[in-house]
Every structure is written in structure tokens, then in C-alpha cells.
Amino acid sequence: MGDLLKNSIFFSDQQICYADILPPSEVRLRIEVAILSFLKNLSSSTPSVSDLPLISRKRSNSRVSRGLLTENARIFLSDSFSMKSLMNENSANSLIRVWKVMEMCYQILGQEKKVTQRELFYKLLSVSPQYFTSQLQANRSIQDLVALLRCSRYSLGIMATSRGVVAGRLMLQEPNRDVIDCSVCGSSGHAISGDLNLLENLIMKSDARYIIVVEKHAVFQRLAEDRLFNQIPCILITAKGYPDIGTRFLLHRMSREFPQLPILALVDWNPAGLAILCTFKYGSVTMGLEAYRYACNVKWLGLRKDDINQLIPEESLIPLKPRDHQIAKSLETSEILQDTYKEELAAMIQSGCRAEIEALYFNGYDFLGKYIGKKIVQGSYI
Image (cartoon, rainbow, N blue to C red; front, side, top):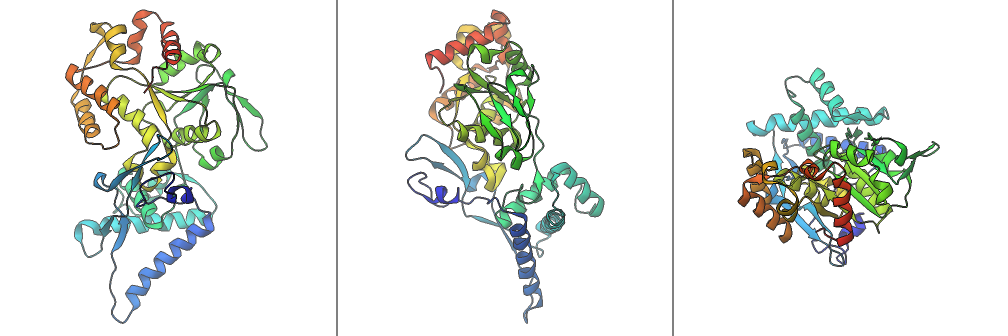
């Protein structure tokens, strides 16, 4: 992947940073080098406490790398640094938290274990309660460590917690395990593992012609219950809301395994639905140096403004909430949002309303499958 990113044939932006996937031995070596460098500064003839240079994860440091031979685009972070220093009262505790997480990850890797971010937080809370009072502090420190060592969180021994499920025309097989037929897993679907190494090594087979990403679990269940994948040869996948890493990783993996399959998203017509689609499509700044690993070329199937005008009664529309306006404002300032998406966003704001996928049930409970089929036949996705 590193060679791909550096190749100007594929990406036009050369000033990009990314996290490597490394074996435990190399990650431990990088940690040891970081510690020795720190101690060397302290024990020199002119001792000093050096600053900790981290890749900045602010929106101002994000960049968009666009494919020159394809329409793909990704969010990357450029090589702009932010500094954390023990000599600065505001960042001293933040720096110490990074070292505490580094210490814990070093131990985890030595024991050949994997832990979730939640498990890691409670361990940190038990040994360093004065520095860790919330999960958010632990999460940010993990991202800081990723930025310092330039390796993925999975390489640090931290595995994802997945909420996602998949169903439809997909056969999955873990090494030396039985084959799982996702078309017979019922309306609940097959649970997606948070073990990224397992997901990377899955053997996949499919005769599907489309992959459909569904925002909501309830809508996913309806489509799986109706066995949409028998009418339209497809794979259904949902993260049950905002996409988690495991679901994003599996979708990205399927996009590599089945590059000929269009990936179509079915989301609510509101700023949050668009934000979810964009996270699947482009990655996210909050994922820092790992963002590009979980992105793939998703198309917007629905809901869109034409659907609102033609298929959904006015009484089914819901006024936008303050949170919707906050998300919309954030999306409006994003340089990665394509023009057709900006037009949809502007229409949402102008109407002052949002519409949920379930509003289509006004036309009957079996209408959703017909709606998806018609949109696919007409090529009505952007």
C-alpha cells in the first residue's frame, strides 16, 4: 500500500502520511527506540525534555488525494506536526497519557494479546486514574501513539469492537473453519468480527452483482427478511448507524476482493445520513493516519431529493434538529464533498426537513425492495 500511495500515477498528492501494519516485534522495536531517544536527551551533557512531535489530526491538516486514473478520493493527513511538551502545562498530561498507552501496548504485544479500546481504558483507569478519567482521553492517546509510531492501532494490539452485520450472496471462510453462507443467517445477518487480521484473511466467494450499504439495522432486517438478495443479487451490510472500524474494514476488503461490484448506500435524507455515507466513501479525519485503509468508492443510491418530492408525503417529513445543522455546517466546509452531494445538502437545509428511509413504507412494506431495484435498473446513483 505504501508504494501505491507514493505512485503519482494513482494519487496526485505526495505530501501524505499513513500508518503501517507491522508485526509485534517491529512495533516493540519502535517503542524501544522512542524511549531510548527520550532517555538519551535526559542523560546528555545538556539534558533536556524533548517535545513529542505528532502528526496533527486537525481538519486544517487534512488533505484530499484524488485518483488520476480513477474517480476514487481519500482523506489523508499531511506532514504537518503538532507538539506535546512536558514544559507546557496544557499538554503535559496529554503527553504522559501517550507514554502510559505506549507502556501498556508494549506489554500487550509482549504477551501476544489483543484488547479492545474499552478494555484498555479500564486497565489504564486502574493503574493511572489521575491521567485517565474518560474513554475519550484513552481514544485520543491511542491516535497520538499511532501518529508517533506510524503504525496502525491493530499493530499496537488494539482490536476493533464491531456492531456490524452482513447478509446475502456471500460465502465466508476463516482458515481451517467451516464455510458460512450469509444468505441463510436470517434477518439478523452474520456478525462482523472486530479482529482485523481475521477479516483480512477471510476467504470470500460471491455471485452478487451489487453491495448495498444500509444505514439502519431495522431497514437491513427488513431487506434480509424479504430476502432482497434473491430478487437482486447483492450483499447487504450495515454498521447499525455510524460506521465502526470492523464494518468499514470488511467493506473495504470486499471492494478489493470484488472490484467489479458497485457499492451503493441507502441512508436517511439528512445531514447525518450523508455524513455516514461520506465516512464509508472517503474515510475520516478522526481516524488520523489510518483513514485511507477503511475507504472505498461508495455511490449514493438513496434517499435523495427527487425521492422526497415524488415518493414521500409531506406529513412524513421531520424538521431538522440543531444537531442536523451542526453536521451540515461541518459538511459544507469539507473540500472533499462532490458537487452533487453539496446540492443534496443544500436542498435539505433549504427545506428545513429530513426524511427517514422508513417513510417509503407509506407505499407498502414491500415497496422498499421495488424502490431499490428500480433505482439500480435506472442507474440512479451518484
